[in-house]
Length: 145
Image (cartoon, rainbow, N blue to C red; front, side):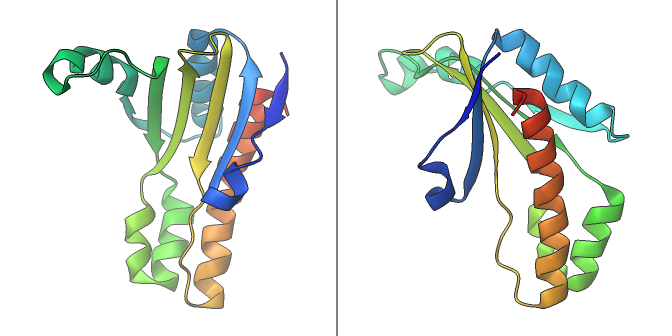
């Protein structure tokens, strides 16, 4: 498996890596990386399936994805710390990791998350930083980078 960062991701607030692998293996690895840390997967959204299902309804010709999903989970410890630092940090729970395989590049799966930002206090910034570090660790594990 090869992994590489996407240059535009830092500017957009996204942390994204890619890996040469089949989509189902990556989806399994994302779930495994979350569960093996003691977290519970709350929801897996099948975004690619929704886009394919609604193509005719919205007048689209094709989906930009072969496959696309997102998985949500939360950490009671990290979320509590973030919300105690700033109650508005409730907006960041649950955490989401997305993964997709583009129609124009089958066999390459992109895995990432949107960095949590907006902290107005040092305690909030530190708490969100811990969550970002967890998400980055999971993405890095899954992509092998």
